[in-house]
Length: 223
Length: 30
Image (tube, rainbow over all chains, first blue to last red; front, side, top):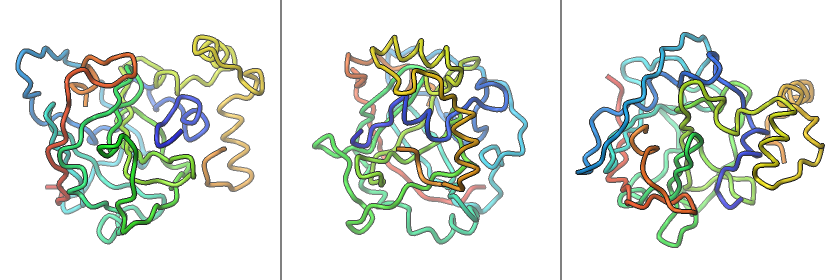
């Protein structure tokens, strides 16, 4: 995978539709605070209904919480740091915030309609370690999901994370793009469209994956 | 993010018009 999320891995890892079936998004996470600065570009305004949910991702940050502000040539978005456990405390003390200067000047490397926006590759097109030369383990959890607007760290072939990140970006009414497909018939249809064969013939559904993971107490990403 | 998602891309899903990250700032939510 080399740092690039794909439909299948997202389906295995915390995939699923939002509380409103995927129409909404993490409410405060990625507001475009200013219009895009690119001249001659027409941007369609996307109206997203508000979502009320008790889930962690939909919790509005409190004053004083640590957030990251991404200033791009296409506008500004912001995000909080939600870790697997004790998110508030880790926000304040987390050593996992990368060397922020690393990202300055990098470009978005992947935009897949109704799926993800991805960045964080260096000039060589690959992810790199920016935490004192170390990678860090994937922090997957059943508490966080690939809802639209979620800011996520990408795991590479080693299963650990480096510099690459992606933001889920789906349209209201969609089922998180292909990643949100959870019905066997839908999985088979999408796999067929991508020219892939599902190892289980499409019978293994996302809810079954989740139930199994909960029973086993496994937090790591499915391989 | 909606604006970025609407950019044109090539066959490899790379934006045809570069979208640059000017800066990433860690700050306090107000």
